[in-house]
Image (tube, rainbow, N blue to C red; front, top):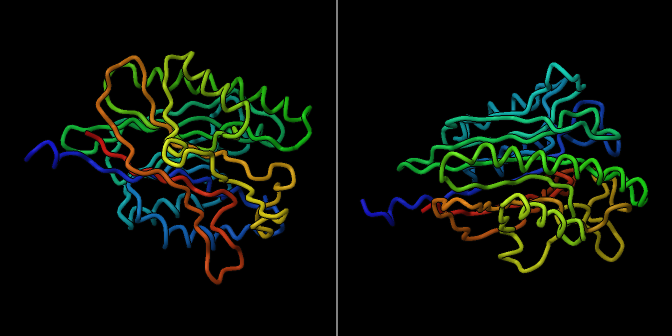
Length: 302
């Protein structure tokens, strides 16, 4: 078999699914079960690797049931974030990786505790090394950093300070887990950093200071930062059913899939396409399957 035939194409999705713990809703009904059912029926089978954010497992069987259904749809491998015994957190971090490919190893780090309602969640970063076959492997990381909760500059100064603590923790974690091989690396999730803000530039500079070169596949392909959360058109939110914060943070880009390079000569990975998937619904009581749009990347591992 030629090397060309052994090139591995992989479809990756990162999706903040907005499946928060029971009793937490934006407008009285988040339609969690209905939305998860649509994601299972219309989304899951189209991907090889799914990076999940806000797929919480605390006080509910939704996450476990979702993962079991993913197995039936051809993605039998998964890891999820858990609550540490100490320090105590009421809920887990909500991140998960679901894969069509076997997991060789996995690691999990809980960040320094966030503030406001984020302080209740064991937010952190997950890592897996996937076996793609033909001696090809892929490092995959997913995270969900501290969120902003207001348009007030003072309040956001506090939440940004919390992110500024968590981001180097993530970079150290990535560095530790990719240091001993040459496999390609992707890093995705809801970064809670708006691509159109000065904070994005600072974020990318911090990555360089750690010796990383982050390839923002979405910007590389579109040449601009598209909206992935709280889309507002002509002053009107496109979703007034399950999304609640658009007056504070309209038209932001928070969701990313990065290709990660470092000082190691890593096996080659290319990105054929990277797009936003809105996952609109048809005939449902809610217009989209989540309050975030997803980011999809089609990668080739050479």
